[in-house]
Image 1: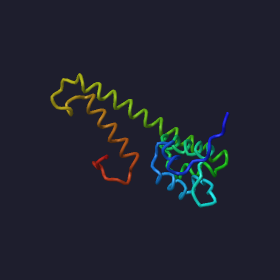
Image 2: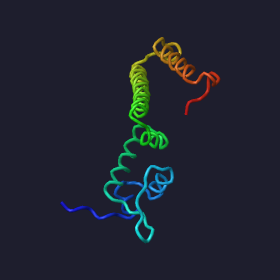
Image 3: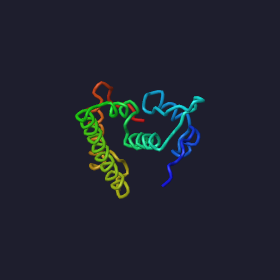
Image 4: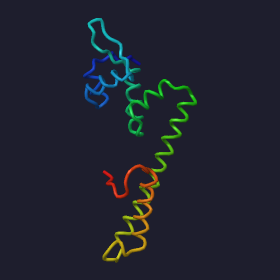
Length: 146
């Protein structure tokens, strides 16, 4: 099997489906360190591209670039704790989405002309409000979620 020739930043960005400024940013925050050619151009080999693909995958899990950088420099226990925390956040989000889906499903069939008169609708709203109040205790009640 032939080894792929190193790529310049534009070709690497196209192969990854990102803009070149994304690769430059990842480099500026310490996530990528592509070697430079004698003329000073960044040179992306398969190893660097695989690392960039890992960054993309970790971003899709909801990790920030700083968290991804921390994963790279942390020991096993630190990585394990960070991943366990993220998984807990994902599970909480899944539970919220499932509850939201149940609420929307109920709304499809709800015959109450005013949602506040429906015990199921009122219960969902009360639970959501309590969850927000517990998650953000320093914010006043009634703040908007964007």
